[in-house]
Length: 246
Ligand SMILES: [Zn+2]
Ligand SMILES: [Zn+2]
Image (cartoon, rainbow, N blue to C red):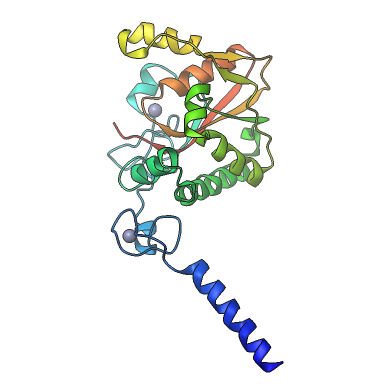
């Protein structure tokens, strides 16, 4: 009996040890890590998007109060009301996201997704009037999604949905199969082309949060927001893991 218990506890210890042992190097400092791609020190050093435009979450170089708005948003009011992007798209966030997206190492997206979920939950509790009716993951070209095996925006939307109890939809906005190659077009043509790339399946609920992994130029986010506004959305927010500095 004792022998049996002892063997059981050894088995348990082995199981516990194997699930917690470092299984790779920290993507930032190459030390051993215990999960999700980062050692504890590097997780604490992640570039948090503290000073940002209140409207589009663009990282700003100087300390910004809660009401600071960037030059772009002053020149032309964006078609969305708010952006939530807790991280700056800099090392090692950029490396975590590209491994998450392109190498299928989905665990590496977890610490960043957790950060987004935390911030979204806090903001919705503080301002319940902003709570969306639906989450819309930024749609990926179907052929690309087949190649990659998953759409990271859907992955993120699922986690956010579970945390705040708001449904997500992949049918409200779809990406069309064929559009002209963006690289051959000038800026105005590119924007028109991008609009053509999305089709909305019906009237949009009033409050929508578009979910994406990274906001770079913001062109896709703006286009999706205006396509949804035309379909009836009155309040559109963009929720992403990270925002690229200028
Ligand atoms: Zn590290
Ligand atoms: Zn801005």
